[in-house]
Image 1 (cartoon, one colour):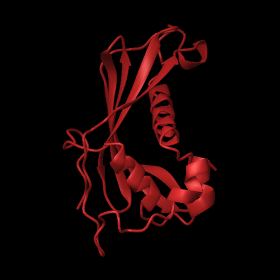
Image 2 (image 1 turned 120 degrees about the horizontal axis):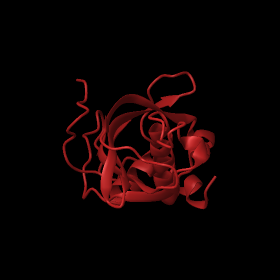
Image 3 (image 1 turned 135 degrees about the vertical axis):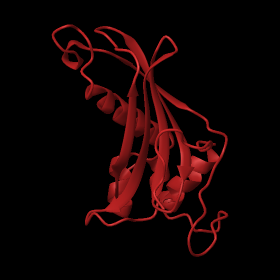
Image 4 (image 1 turned 180 degrees about the horizontal axis):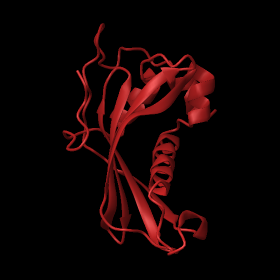
Length: 174
């Protein structure tokens, strides 16, 4: 558990949340960036990154964004019983990454609703987007049922300015 986890996980709805169904929250669209390198284990026999490994890179980016805000997944799970699951994902593979490439995984929250986070992620090499992803994360309990985004995490995401713009690939279901 991070030092701030216990203090912020139970922040009350007084932070601008209205009773009943929360409205989606939006902000400036600040981006978190994670640097990583392509290792031999990430590639196929031709030295090109295997397509499913981009999803692992994106997961690391999301995890480190949360950690940078003071919310490790293990702390959220221990404190609230909430875990995150990918509900929907769209990936646009534009160009391959290769062995030894230095990459960045850029993560931005587009929208926060009661129980979901809509994210935009880009995996880049030298600024060029290799893979663009948009995904919908759902907060669920151990039983798999939806749970609200913890108020402290919501407040940290909104305060950091990590939400904005309308998604282009993934559309929310009503």
